[in-house]
Image 1: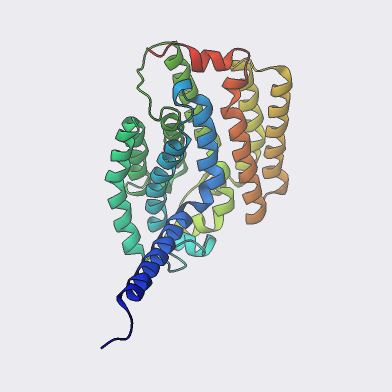
Image 2: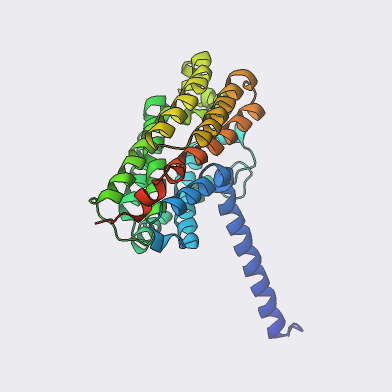
Amino acid sequence: MSNISPPLVLSRELYLFASNAVDFLWTLYLFTRDDMLTLIIPTAIYGTFAAPPETMHHIIPRLTWIWVNLLEFNLANQTVDADEDAMNKPWRPIPSKRISQTTARMLRWILLPICFVLSCAFRVPLDCLVIHIGNICYHDLGFASHWVGKNLVNGLGLAAFNGGASMIMHHYSLTGSASGSRRDIQILNFLLISTTIHAQDFRDVVGDHATGRLTIPLAYPRASRLSMLVLLPAWSLFLCLFWHVPAFVSTVVCAFATYVGLQFCWNGGTSAKDNAGYRDYNIWLCFVHVLPFLADGGAARVLLSPIS
């Protein structure tokens, strides 16, 4: 007869269960770790600024929605690109053997209906559909293999993330002046990201070349770096003028955009330097995303006008 008392056995089982649960949650976090500063935080900041006043305080639902949908997207990305990750990011869950590729694929499809149910509960089902239809096009229909499809789907997906984050827990219509301002913001977000998102591809040229993916840095090595020095200041100037941003703010944003562009032109060429450039690119995105709310009357125009 065992000398171990039932309470001690139960305590050990609870400890093992808690330990396994924490380990599993850490594995899920590792799927999204790269995007904490590049997508989750910027999107949450934008979503909070752009949210109607009565829903701005829904920060936890906003972060939850962003993270769960991003997790499903990243599971698709990292199960398709496991060989690339083994070269570029060996610490990720699949290359480091924390989870098998087969299990990660199953988890991706299990998460898909969960994302939709969660989005319905948070009242942003259309944004969820755009994200995951784009995800299927990107990873399963081969759009990611060429820079045209890759950039367009990235632009659409990130605009949908921004749009969903800003409308969490809110009933909205497509009419009204505030809705028109939000529509302008999302169209500009899509165009902005579609034309500049190749900033993320400089750091992955080795893996992309090995897997046969044609990104802009691989197709146009020199011109793609010069494009960052042209496009970032040009977009900054246009958006500052479009949103009637004060001169001081415009000067700061345009100067920082020029600095980021120069990083890609002068300091690029190694993975570490291109990672730093991509980090600063995302800081720039945060700046330009909040320009409508820094303009004279911008916050009132976007946030306070009647929605329907």
